Image (cartoon, rainbow, N blue to C red; front, side, top):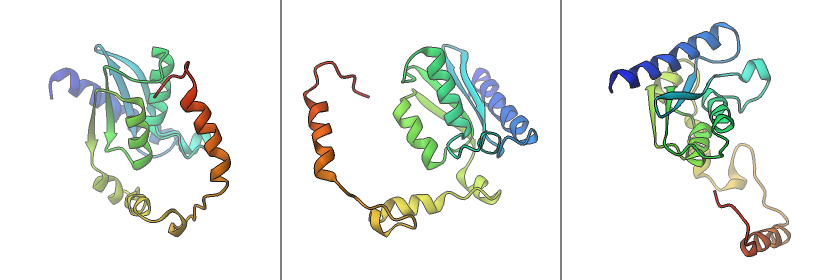
Length: 158
């Protein structure tokens, strides 16, 4: 890593500590950088906002997309204080940044009480067999919406 990359990672780590000490949520921080400038940042806000999706990466992605006026993070780098959890990993892939840097590992997070391994295990199961059962219904009815989408000329793929 070069000095600039270290600077941005240290900023993510600072946000992690600051947010945790403020009681906003766990010790996680994230900054998103484009062309050498921070365009989005966040710390874990789960407790402060009562929002289980308010992880640092999601908070930072939302801010960066708003700043860039785009739903994708083309040409951006994500600096996360910890290896992203499955939810954040999904959000990152949907946002499509150029690359992701992280400091702590998922094992470090598990050691601190943030173990997301069970989610990876649940993903592999048949949806109906998960700890939170997921039951498909009215599939034939929703297929009409997909058919309409497929035929639209003015859609934006993402």
